[in-house]
Length: 290
Image 1 (cartoon, rainbow, N blue to C red):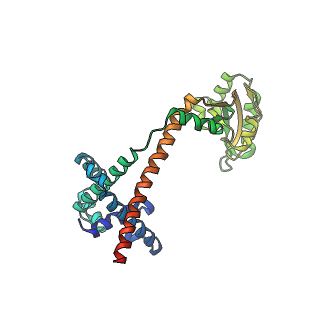
Image 2 (image 1 turned 60 degrees about the horizontal axis):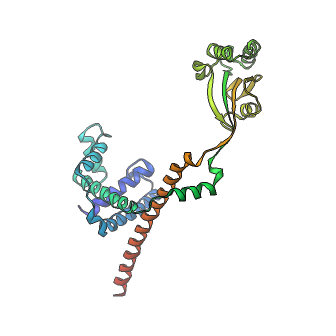
Image 3 (image 1 turned 90 degrees about the vertical axis):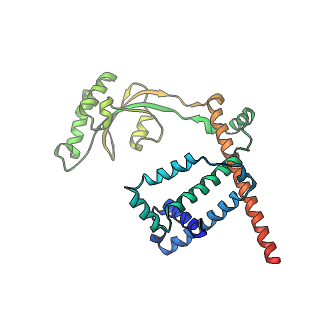
């Protein structure tokens, strides 16, 4: 495969990822950035594939076929696919070769990452103890609501009419959960009406501020007065107050170890690439001196 075709592939990939268009459709300023990205990607790919580890890596033909099929599936047919490749400066065999190289380079980096040590329970425990704030879950409220919207173009939803309607609903409420759910189903103009007005268990800050401030001052089994937000008029029913809590180490351990492992894998890959670039720079310096 020619160097020009390889570069065309990386230009296509970088352009699609950053701007969802072909390289030739980019403005001049963006072209310079994408050209730089493609040149670097091509260099790194070449260095990775020339590394000793690459000799140990094989990419199954089925994986390559699957990648090609997924790309072809984006097009209406073979002719559209071939035409778009041509517009990007490639033929189908160029794409296959470029994909094979990319998949192999990715597999090499995966092998490098797999050499990272796995996090231990002791390391996870140390991190957990050092960052207690990461595992604290604030107080939440289990809440339902009834909503009447405001829309000046609809007579019954003009501000005064909507206010009057929701005030009548509020006067009708007797404080029971069953009646609230029934009235929500009958009158609320929120999709939650179908579930008796259930908004679920919410943390502080999730609802409109006008609702949030009131909700987090309410007790369990309490009903608010009529409240207004940019969505319209509301009545809240606080079903339960759920105290804040802290996730146990047992609950958090797997997530902590996954995060540590991910960071170590990334560090291994970055160190591997840095070593390749350093070696390449040294070769260039030697050539200049010679």
